[in-house]
Image 1 (cartoon, rainbow, N blue to C red):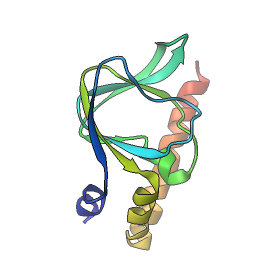
Image 2: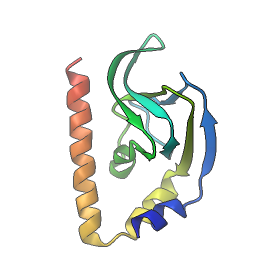
Image 3: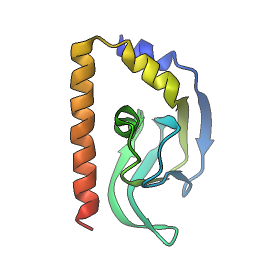
Image 4: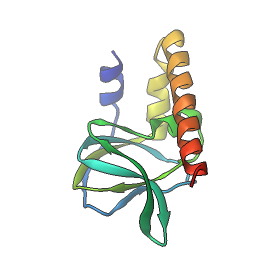
Length: 127
C-alpha cells in the first residue's frame, strides 16, 4: 500500500552528475527526493567540499523524507557520489499521500522520522 501511495505521486525524474549538491544543510525542503539509483554522500560541506562525511546512501531509498515529514530543515548536506537518478516529489503531494496512511502507521512513521532526525543532529554536533 505504501509503495503505491508514494510512487503514484507526481514527480520529476532526473539524472544528476557526481559532485552535485542535492540538499543543503539548514534549508527547508520544497521537494522530497527519492534516490532511484546511485550513491549519495551525507555530511557537512566546508568551502564547497564535503570535508566531514557522515555516511553514504545507495538507492533505491528516500533522501531525508524525515525532514519533510517533520517540516524542518535538512540536518546534513547531501552530494551525489556517483551518477544518480532521482525523483523530486513536491512536498505538498508527499504530505497529502502521508495523510492517507492509517493513523497508527502514520504515528509510527513520524516516530521513526524523529529518531532519524535526532541521530543526524547528534552526528553533526560531534563535528
